[in-house]
Amino acid sequence: MARSVRQPQNNEEAQTQPALKLIESERRLLHLIDNAKLGMVMIDQMHKVVETNQRFADMLGYSRDEVMNLHTWDWEAVTPKQEIKETYSDLSQIDFSIETKHRRKDGSLFDVEVSGIGVKLSNAPGDNAILCFCNDISERKKAERKLSESEKKFKSFVENAADIIFTVNTKCEVEYISPNCEKIIGYSSDKLTGKSFLKLFESEGRLSFLSDIKAAFKGEIRPGYEYKIQNKDNGFEWFSIKLSVIDDSATGKPLLICNTRNINERIENEKKLEYLSMHDQLTGIYNRLFFYEQLQRMDQQNLYPLSVLTFDLDELKSINDNHGHLTGDEVLIQCAQMVGTSLRKNDVFARVGGDEFSVILPTTSEEDADVLAQRIIKLIARNNKNTHLPPISISMGISTKVEPSVPIKIILSTADKRMYQEKRNKKAGAAEHRITGQSQSR
Image 1 (cartoon, rainbow, N blue to C red):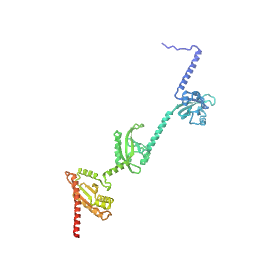
Image 2 (cartoon, rainbow, N blue to C red):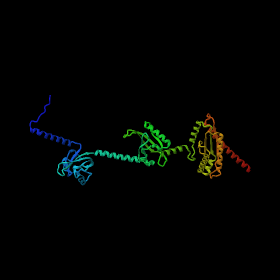
Image 3 (cartoon, rainbow, N blue to C red):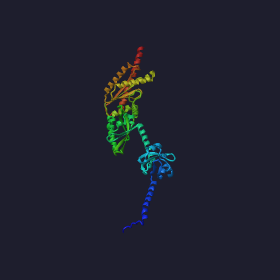
């Protein structure tokens, strides 16, 4: 069934309907404008408010009636009044979008984004206006300022940190490196960005780092890595590197973040501690603990014949009593230096007691060890003629292991027994010499 269409009853009704529709349309438009989230204001050529919506009034903290009595410079906080008049002398030609600050009724300021378009209200000269749409962007600007402050803090942290932070791609090319690299290793960031970081490693570390980053990109990451990295002065320094993998938001490809810290001081301290744990502090040669560790190691490696030469200084107590302990220390040091010059690279020379020394001679027969002992005795005798210190005299004992079945402690014990036997023989010979001398004097 066809729908009937109501026809106007007369001409008066026909004329009234368009007017009512226009009124209703204007009412709806004004309702939309008043409830819009954007502040809207129309300003005439004298820069006075012609019309405003409620949102704009609320943004400024005024009533709508109060806003109708305002000029642009009453709320514009950035551009001075005179500049507004000069810049916007013909509002009909204006079309802009700017960020500025508006002043509220209570004097407080807020950030606002303003878009304005000029209109000509009539043909009358100067009957111009501008319609402005204002968006309060205070929260956005606040977030931007926080982000900017955060970026500045991060930049300051990175530039002044003790660690170098850099990222590398799967080709080991530097995508980013923190500017503090110039202060730490002497290279500016632009000299390293886009280049292979491998060139800064020593040859052995280069292969190791390349292998490690390949494994890291596969998810195989150790807690820490240590490498030698070259500085601009061509010297190598120790660095520890912690690795983590991320995806580059721009390319979607994986990147390796490398947090790099100089550990030269720590390595040096570790070396010092290691040295002290193995060496005698007075003479600088190995200590008792290291001697026994090496003796056991060489015995397990079957470095036969394995000889041990043990000696101590005769009459050191007498030197300490008559010349002082400092002189006694000098005698110990000089003795250690002379014996050390007679030994091979693989021999282990240690101070195992106050005045006792031992030497491990791998792959050395007892006959060859005896040749070494005689060479040491002759060297000491020559030195005694050209020193200001009391003459040095030593007693020696040698023992050699040629079969695995003999316990190494037996070899040590035998060398000690032979040393003490030589010492007793010397004392007995000295006593006999004294007795003979006394008999002859009678």
